[in-house]
Amino acid sequence: MPPKFDPTAITTVFCRAVGGEVPATSALAPKIGPLGLSPKKIGDDIAKTTSDWKGLKITVKLVVQNRQARVEVVPSAASLIIKALKEPPRDRKKVKNVKHSGNLSLDDILTIARTMRPRSMAKTFPGTVKEILGTAQSVGCTVDKSNPHAIIEKIDAGEIEVAED
Image (cartoon, rainbow, N blue to C red; front, side, top):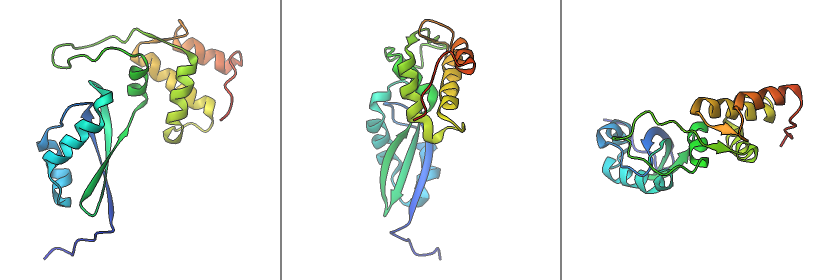
């Protein structure tokens, strides 16, 4: 006989989903089935919560307490950058290998870095900014109409001052 269900226990479940779409119930069922939740209902909640991240792959955190699930979006640096580029949502099934060739301002990068600061591996805030700039480089966009790596070098040289928050 399994142990009695504890209503005060809080369980967190992470899963990747495409914003605005219902994830496959076959992917959700093994994670949330043992907690006594309906994968279909949770899938609808995820689709509703991630509607403003349409077309972007995003990590979703499910906080389950007393068989009630609360859905939170945990954005990655890349998805924050792509969202800041304000590109129109695209159909993932038809359009492949998209180049995100937009341009962001340094203020946008600083805002994203402040959002990502608690999850960053860097010791200082300028380190977090350089992490975000590296992600911007791999996404393929420019920052202030120049290569993100050039801005990283300017931060290292002290030409661009990033204030500690």
